[in-house]
Image (cartoon, rainbow, N blue to C red; front, side, top):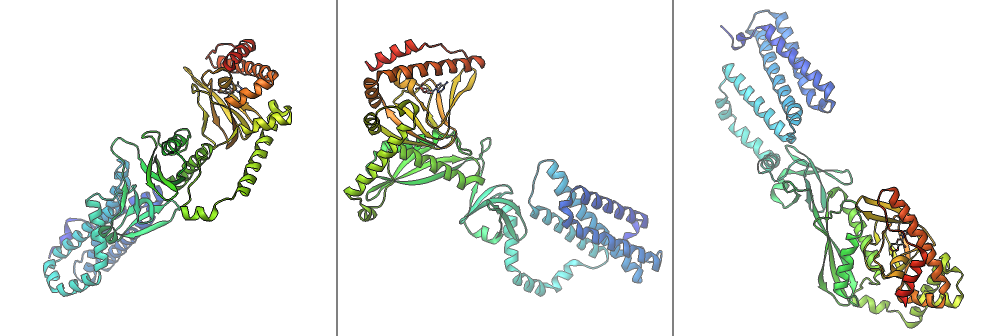
Amino acid sequence: MPHWTDGLLPQEWLVLLAVCAVLAGGLRLWRPVHQRGLRATWFFINLAMASQALALLLAANAYTGPAGVLRETAHVLAVWAAIQIGTLLLFRVLLPAMRVHLPQIAQDLTMTGLSLGWVLLSLRLAGVDPTQLFATSAIVTAVVAFAMQDTLGNVMGGVALQLDNSLKVGEWVQIDDLSGRVVDVRWRFTEVVTRNRETVVVPNSWLMKNRFRVLRREPGQPLQWRRVLNFNIDQSAAPSAVLRVLQQAVLDASIAHVASEPPPSAVLLEIGAGYHHYALRYWLTDPQFDDPTDSAVRVHALTALARADMRLGNPLAERLVTHEDELSRNARDQREHTRRTAAIRGIALFANLPDAEQQVLATHLVRAPFVAGSVITRQGAVAHWLYLVIHGEAEVVVDGAGGRTVVARLRDGEFFGEMGLLTGEPRSATVLAVTDVECYRLDKNGFGQVLTARPELAEEISTLLAQRRAATGARLEASAQPAAPARSKDILARMQAFFK
Ligand code: CMP
């Protein structure tokens, strides 16, 4: 009796097996990551070869008896191996080459569907009616399905997640308190890798039943995630000023992963007992860095609040407990005054002033800390302060038609902002904090008092100012952005006119 596999000669089966072996070997060498998926294929290929060889040894052309069974087994296994190799090539080589990345479950489903089809076809060709097989084993099927209902729920969940596109590989998800990137959707579970490099396995059936958040990129837009940071500020600070300081703190800082567009915004959320509750919102461009970027934004905001002398608010009850008495307040003020006097002595320009004048000067100083990366003062802005650098490093840059030029670096004991403050002109340059910079600011009034008492200081400063302008001019010229020269005599005249 002719057999269904008669159509193919033994050599053709061997060729099929050889092709499978070559492809599997090539794939294994070329993409070692798929080694695990290829293990079963290798096993089938070897088993098919062994069965075929044994069948030939037993009886070259027999299609019945043990030789026939072995031959048939070999054929079934050979096609199975071909199905596995084909799906692996399609999903792991061809589709990725076309930039189509499907989750593991798509590959598994295809492979299982094709394998199942092949088993049914083999049964039919071998003369067994598969429908009868199903009918007789209906009870067994029901028992198995009942026992596997959780697993089936997960499988159906995985398929549904893929079909309705609610979760895709590569997307950032937030599931309860967990936040991470989806790396694969499998039969039973979805794999999420968190920022801590933990792989979290979430059952698909759970994802089907519960709420989770997906961070999705709008077409043609970069990925952005709005973050909200909360601050309680003492109620003595004017809300409009607090909102401005919070917003400006982020605008003036170049923090990695903070989008410049849309800009940050601040809102007053709630009025508590003794404090106001504000929210500072900004857009994060990479969810991988949520905590560190939140922290950097908080550091900038807190430093800006400290500069503006806006204190964090405590609930009223706590304030009653920690309410400071006059003695402790005086002691604190005295400590601050000593710090300011020390700061003045550390600035070469003021170091030789008599003690009494240093003390007067100290009363005009305001503490102004800056975090690395912030803009301390901006080119073109109206000048209100002279800055004394107590600790840290700042960079003076000039923006012109030809771009940005670094003209100087300022360190401990130096001062800046004298050009604008003494002549009334807008700031001639932008000063950026390279490291965290501890500054004190001196207002025009305080500086006017010193200059009136010590005219020789005005001359010293105008000479330094002229030197700085010359240096800036030389730097700009070197970068092909000429600046107007200035003589110290002109500057002195302008200073005298400004301070009358
Ligand atoms: P002002 O113009 O008020 O604001 C920017 C400040 O940068 C400026 O005052 C100077 O104090 C400082 N500055 C500008 N050019 C130089 C320079 N070449 N060397 C040191 N400081 C400078």
